[in-house]
Image (cartoon, rainbow, N blue to C red; front, side, top):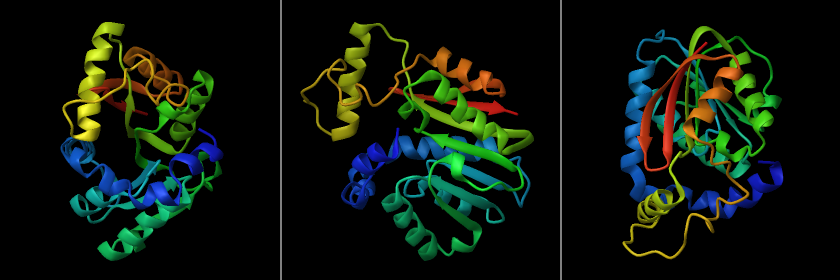
Length: 229
């Protein structure tokens, strides 16, 4: 996803209503946050965490409360989304534990290696395979030996008929309504999201230099993995 698309889909108007628009899907978010806590609870008390595509800061706000000694670097190319998170961090009293970087990961200044990284529903917006491998490789380059990555993306290996059935469930999840119009084939994801099979996502993460890539989460089309450096 280039900056023009970031501004189009995550601009000021979209950012202002982002949290309210997804509030009814909190159950899936909470499950992912539980997974993050379980995966990361063995990290040092003063761990440094890289959050790529931090959005309005939900995962950092959760982790900062669960692990009060940690520090976070939030990387987010959408200024409006990052501004909302900055305000939330100030209100929560954690702004001094956060670095706010507006831009893509490649523009983040060099720093000491991180103990862990998150990339939650981000890499599927990179539709070209080698660019996606490069994205994971950039994350790998920021991490110390033995560190962890939690990645989640939209992904499916289902055949077309089954995929359409699951897409109806996805629309219910998104809208909170039982009856929705639309098919997977005409979904707004077309051209904007690379809907890779789970095995293909694992292969890209491994190609970027990670090992022990384990599936740890699946909800409708959302798949999550834990990887080690």
